Length: 156
Image (tube, rainbow, N blue to C red; front, side, top):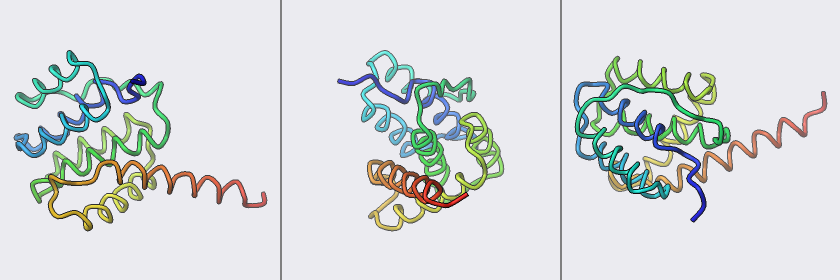
């Protein structure tokens, strides 16, 4: 299996986002662990991530060295989705989501676009816990590539 692009620190940051409102719901915890498993992380990292879903953690440092712009947008969008799982987005969640966006180096406009893609995909699912993470990642990558191609095609 290929080396995971999104490291354990990303999932620990997602757990911190989930804890921002003071409680990490079981659906939020499941979403974080499921996403880490789908990424193919080592068992030790999965265990550490599971522990972070059981008690509050801080965001920590995110190593984005091996992450593309699409990877960073995906992480932000998954975090944004996690804040929406319980149907209420608190000011604390907004604050930690903003900090995550900054840690990932994502400007406000791409964050807004990622939230729009998130809402679009969420509207097609039967319930938030079954959110299609693969569709989210694929759609973000496709739209980012289209935007980059459009910018490249513009005369200067």
